[in-house]
Amino acid sequence: MKQSILILFFALGCFAFDFSIYNKLDDIERYLTTLDSCKGRVKSRLESIGTTYEGRSINMITMSTNARAPYCGCKKKAILVECGIHSREFISIAFCLYFMDFLKNTQTGIQLVKKFDWYLIPVLNPDGYVYSMNVERLWRKNRNPFNETCVGTDLNRNFGMEWDPANGGSDDPCNLFSYSGPQSFSELESQAARDVIVNRGIDFVGYLGVHAFGQMWIYPWGYTFDLVPDDATLAKCAQIATAAATSRNGIPYTYGKVTDFFPTIGGLAVDYAKSAGIKFSYEIELRDNGTFGHLLPEDQIIPTSEETTDAIVAWADCVCAEIAS
Image 1 (tube, rainbow, N blue to C red):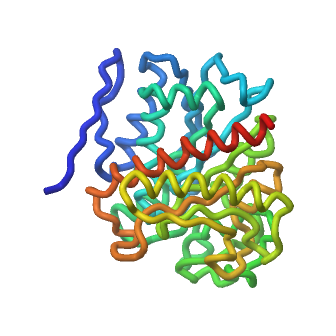
Image 2: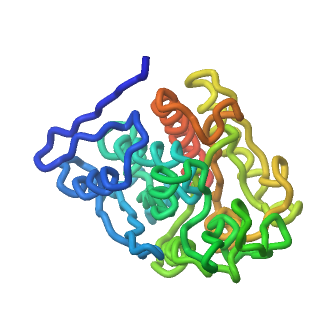
């Protein structure tokens, strides 16, 4: 029987939202607009960070409190969570929404927001998500047309860190999976994410790009087999995160460099975040290992979100300890 968990908000103006299904974009946006009116110790703010080719807003939620945990340092730092860069990865978006509720409405979540400010982009690729949900379920790219017959760029090949279609991407705009775009940051969605990372003066210490599938936490570099100087530190926090994820439901997660699992790839968001100075930059691959792949059933949304939340709580503690040491 399909698991159905309906989580209700009873504060004035809040919207009843079902986190156990893959919601349509209109319902997601309606939910996001209610967060500011929900009472609680965590303050949330919705803003548009850009507009897509088809005219949809790229929304971001900021969650913060005035308090901070003293062992995270004198100046409160921030973490960016980006979901839905690939439109067919519905579980990424579902997790992001679940995690926002966790931050706002649980004691553990509130403690996380005391340690860090959180910036969450739940659907970086809204045009692609709508198209994947309504027309072509396994659509991956955005919907910006190159010409009359070739549509879309793989946004996770379009970032300006060693952008190179010949390195794990494609210069063919008709390629359905990995077209890198005509140049780095050619796309409105990657531009919006870039501007949050580098043009707002936010002191980001962490970046989490949430994907599916593969059950792993991976970190730079992706464009080369070379190690980042702090490889051991990134590996330490990834190991802690994957152990926490695995312990929740017994689903095995692993970790390593991008190139431990994939060929070299240029233009990755996680590489760009690292190159922009975000020390703890990771790409998370959620369930599963290929049984369902991008068609992960809805009854796995809640357990996937729970184990990933456990992982992020443990990871955030590791990050906090590292920056305070």
